[in-house]
Structure formats: C-alpha cells, structure tokens
Length: 116
Image 1 (cartoon, rainbow, N blue to C red):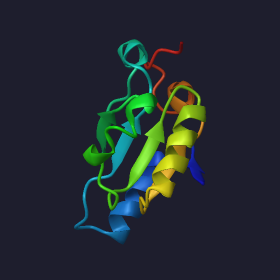
Image 2: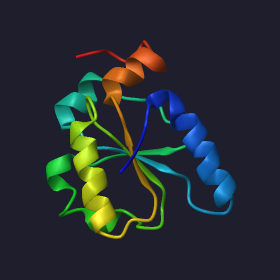
Image 3: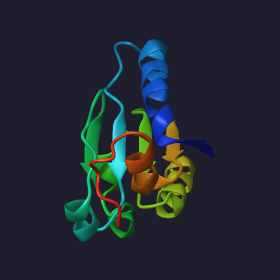
C-alpha cells in the first residue's frame, strides 16, 4: 500500500496530473464519520473532495471510478488505510493513504483545521 503525508499530497497530485493530463481530477476520499467532518474538514485545492464514511464504502462503491486517482483520508490514517486496501482489492488503479490523516494535515498544511 502506498502512503503519502499531507505535505506530500501536492506533489502526488502534480505527478498524477503529469502522468495523465487529460484524466479526471484526483479525488480525496474522506472516510470519517459525519460528525468528524463537521468538526474539521480540508479545503480542496487541485482535487475534488468526497465524503463517504468507511462503513458505507462497499455499498457506495459505484460512486467511485476505478480509473480515477484516489487519496484516502481519515482522522489518523488507520481507517483510510483499510479503505485503500479494500479499493486495491476492487481493482482501483491508483489509490494512496494520507498517512497521519486530518490530524497531521492540521500540523503540516493548515493549522486552521481543528484538531480533535
């Protein structure tokens, strides 16, 4: 499983766009619970943000494009790692885990994102 830190996300996004400039905009898949999303969220810059709680990913798999690059995000990186593993097993071509989750995002990229 490939993991990136929040600070590496921009570089990953650029690499994905260079590899397929006409391809779909990369997706950050936030797999946290709705209350967590209300507590703290990220601002999309160069990617689309989609919220699908981890427990509902299998039922909502049809909302995701297996050819679209996906970076999975949760609170600390454990749930998102499980989703990455699941998506890889479902044949998704380019999926990475955002190691450290939104907690690390707040530390590395945007201190205005609340820590909880």
